[in-house]
Image (cartoon, rainbow, N blue to C red):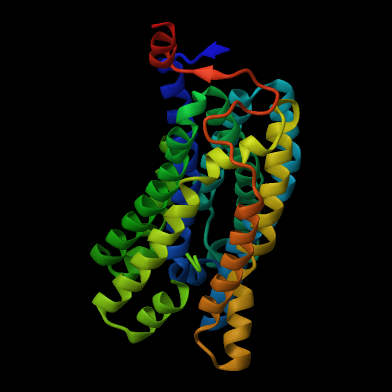
Length: 327
């Protein structure tokens, strides 16, 4: 049995959460500035084609993630979680910053989107190593009885980063003219990245979004967000408990990132094709329902890990628990 140091646990949780803030800040910024980015780097393409190309650059960071997990996961098992986590966070921030300094298509031609592609590849590789290492990092430092709560801070970082990026992009779009946004404004959120270092209700949510209007749209997104929280809050404490210590970071990173790459990175393309081919705008809901059924079966078959030591690790207790047991 080992006793968790509260100060060390706080630092571990803080470091992992910051890593996710950095990662998802970029996704928020890139997603909300897609139209602007398409005009800067794909000037020679028509509007719809330019948007598709921009989303292609967005998807590439998902598709490359398994390679990041394949490299950084086993490396984390060999040289330590903290070193790899620090390295991947720095790489992510550098990749985001690099996008902010790449000249537009009108200045350097085809080299512009190619440089953005390279930056997105750097981000994807670093993300593939960051998330698995972060989950492992928190799980191995947290007391067994608080692993779920402390692990949930990892997703708090995810959502905070995304909301932060989306907020900055929205404010810039509101206060700047289109010319200002195209010439220099869109670069600001990328440049400030460097210092930062329920069947899972799906159809009602999509139907609310289709109604239109602020209230219905907000309600639909709120339903989706609340169901996502149920998944995201427990993921960081559940996955690390599935693997033994000596291969935990590597096995978790590889398995998780392959899944994210196959489904997370391709969802928008698949949904777009299904909606276009069938004319049914409810396909995103059907997709979520199917995923929810698969997820429910998997959860039913998953061994409960709450309050139990990780495989291959000694039991970890907080100082309060140790004091209570002695009494």
